[in-house]
Figure 1: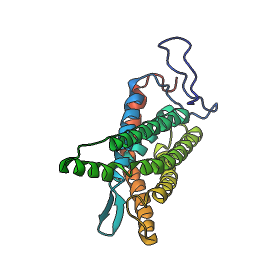
Figure 2: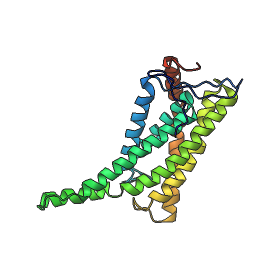
Figure 3: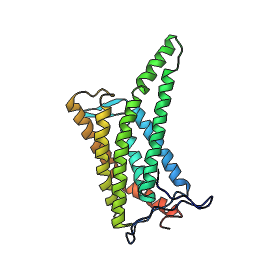
Figure 4: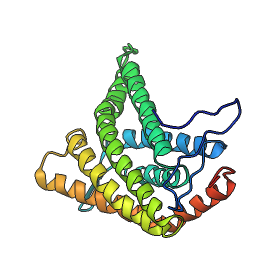
Amino acid sequence: MNGLSMPSAPGQNAVPETTPTGSGARFASIGSPYFGIMLAVMAVVLILSNIGASKGVAIGPIITDGGFFLFPLAYILGDVISEVYGFKVARKAIFTTFALSVFASLCYWVIIALPGFGDEYGTAKQAALEGALGPVPQIVLASLLAFLAGQTINSWILVKMKARSGEKSLWARLMGSSGAGEFVDTLIFCSIAASVIGITEFGTFVNYVVVGFVYKTLVEFIFVPVTSLVIGWVKKREPSYGA
């Protein structure tokens, strides 16, 4: 699925993704613990943001959901993985993250379906679980389609830009790929998830889409210096980077 070459002997690193000759683009193989850590954090962030997204949030005239402060972090991690490890590894991270998200959703469904205590406290707990976790499967579906499309576009554009510019213009890659990815992600997600969190009017839906896109993109732009520092830090500690 991930398109990586397999090592020829136990313990040997996977071959890094190749790039056109003379492009100056370099990538690392998955041979250190850094990829695993970033993948685990991305999965946790996405699962938590899916739960939070089941709650509609109104901050003055701004309409959003409870996962708004978490979700941009998943995209920032996606940028780091794409820049350091390449498109094929980033695609592997996207598929793995969503497999875990779907698994979490199935677990919620089983938990809700299990028979609970019949007293007043047990009934109240069951209602609370159904209210909080019941909408999550539709949120996961929305997030699955949106994040799959948005992150794939984001990663593909970033890697294509890197193939042309090499190690230069990192900030341009991060900002250019983020805008396209976030727009596709936000539009797909909001279209599917709006009804789950109680958004039924067209004007409110437009507010939800515009606020989501602008907010996510601004957060990524603001964090470009931090993302660049993290990317530089990981590159220096990946023995296979550019090998």
